[in-house]
Amino acid sequence: MRPAAAERGLTLVEMLVVLAIIGIASGIAVLGFGSGRGVNVQAEARTMAARLSLAADIEMVQDRRLLLAWDDHGYSFLGWDPNTRRWLPETGNSLAGRHRMPQGFRFAVDGASPAPLASDGTGQGIVARISDGGQAWQVLFDGFVAVAVPAPAGTAAGAA
Image (cartoon, rainbow, N blue to C red; front, top):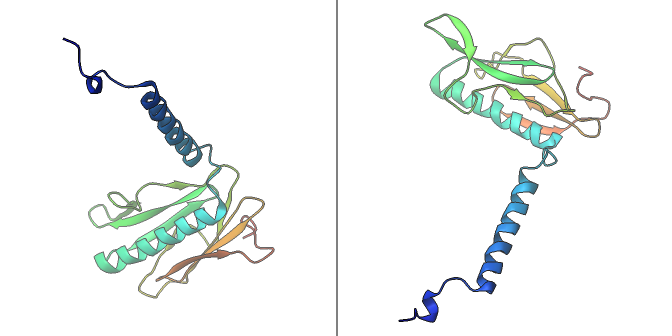
């Protein structure tokens, strides 16, 4: 007894459609996760602004103190540990881990590292500059809100 036509398997056209879909999906993946071409100064500045805003929210909601620590290559958040009575890297939330700037980016923050975020209004704010030689953006943080804006001419990162 021969199987019915619908039970014989894939036709050549069906196989070509599947291969085309796989090809398109892999092309999108390569473009989306490629060699860093999608990373730009504006995206880095907005990421930092979002993380600073989240840190301010965590300080207010959880009644915790946080610091921003940085160097020329990136930044991280530190939280006060009352058990050890020390500042330790944040863990267990979106602020955990060190954020490293992409290769070729310049990063600078006004003032000395680390700086308190001071969402209670006692801080002096934070001004960070991120550039890649072509673009330059600033992240302005007043203790409550962080915004990413294009940097004024002549204020490239590293010049702070």
